[in-house]
View 1 (cartoon, rainbow, N blue to C red):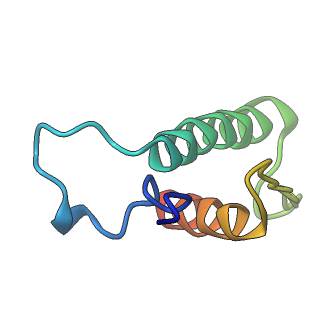
View 2 (spheres, rainbow, N blue to C red; view 1 turned 180 degrees about the vertical axis):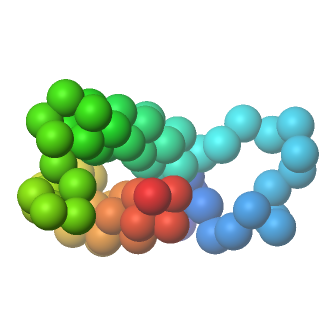
Amino acid sequence: GDDADDDIPTSNNNRKKNEEPSPMRRRANEMADEIIRTIVESIDEGGHGPISPLNMTISIGSEYGRHRSVVLAEHLAVVL
């Protein structure tokens, strides 16, 4: 069989409490932490806010293919 999607999580309800998150979910969490730090720094040090809005473009790609990139982007959107 094709094991390509084995590490793509389906939902938190299917995981045991003590089970490690999938590599995909772990990477989405790492990226979210980095993005949030950048946003906070831009607001605090760059003076961005209601008068000077901040625009961000986040490009995501995966060496495992387009589907994985979409799944990573979806998980990242949920975390953010």
